Image 1: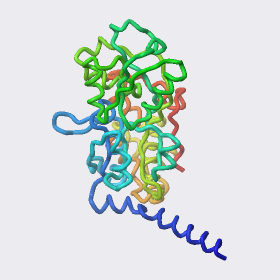
Image 2: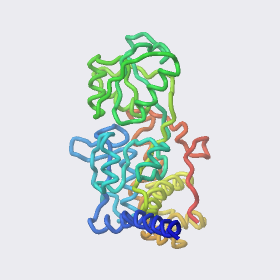
Image 3: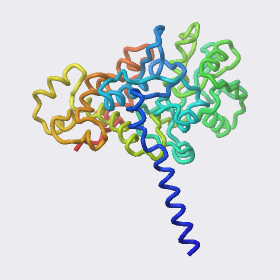
Image 4: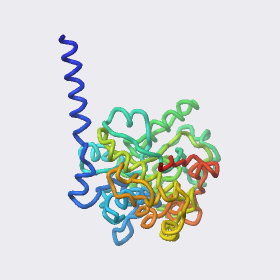
Length: 338
């Protein structure tokens, strides 16, 4: 009997936990905006301009969620967070979604009371060095001083890499990304290491970017994506389907420019379901049935977001690679709206 009572109590406790943050959608509607946690300034992903206007791939994800919820992609405010601060800010309710080049790992997904939703950028950890060092491989870095961010997977990955290859190093870690790149730029470190996309972004902050190079080794898997609190499946669904809507739009050839005409004239059932002229899929999410139309018309499809923020014609010059659609040999794949 005691065992049965304890099982019931545990079950009730789990229900209480799952409902603790079960009203994120109601909360954001009540305050009229979504609070989005972003980086402290990473070009291409989340970075403010001189007027304080944020842009980037991670920023677009938050704007897409705002478009789905409010019909207004501008109904979002941004909270810059260090790597050390980000998970606490989300768990405490300071922010509603963390969209900050954050790696999906087993520990983070299971032990922090948080849920990763999707991967909006597949990455891997890289290493940048001054060309003046005259090296071409990470295997030549024995005894190097290595700069990185504290509270990140990069610390663990670079330590594993040096240990696995029988090399020693001196790790120099800082909380803020700008502190890391400043230390590297001043010559305090021989190596700067983080996700390869972030290496490309931070390299632009150096006085002479062309004097530095990224080594060929990719030493880890870094699936980056937005994070929400556990126990709120509705909010998790809204976030992940906002990303999936952008992927499906790109696959269907629906863009920010043609989405209006597509919605008015196209008779293809899959397009009609995505754009809300057939079915009640928005109601299942708790938003209006034109949720995906609002995302595409205000933010664009995934390819458009990628190209304007991090693509080959931006200063980052990142090719699509594994972030291409599955139809083009990449890993980005949007489940169907049906």
